[in-house]
Image (tube, rainbow, N blue to C red; front, top):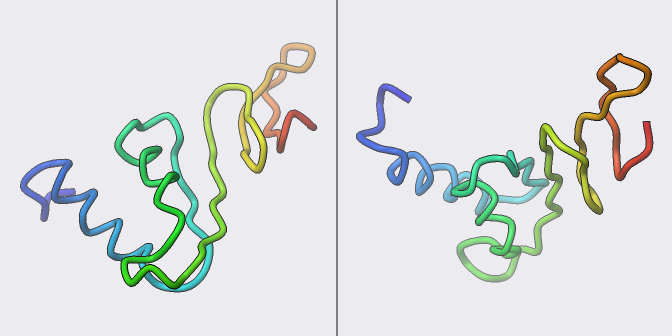
Length: 81
C-alpha cells in the first residue's frame, strides 16, 4: 500500500488487474472492493469474469465466510462447513 497515494488509487490498479482473464477473489467486507463485484466484465467489456467473494460473516451464493460451530471457527462455502 505504500506505493499508492490513497485507497482510490489502489482500487484503480486492482481493477486494472481484474481486467485480465480468470477469477476475481474479492473481500466483500471492504465496500470499495465489494463494489467491483457488480463490474462483471473486464475493462474492454468482452471478458465475463468468475467472481468469488469472501467475508468474515455468513456467506451468500458463491462466497466463502466464517461461522461458529460448537465454539470453533469454520471456513464455509455457501453456508456449508
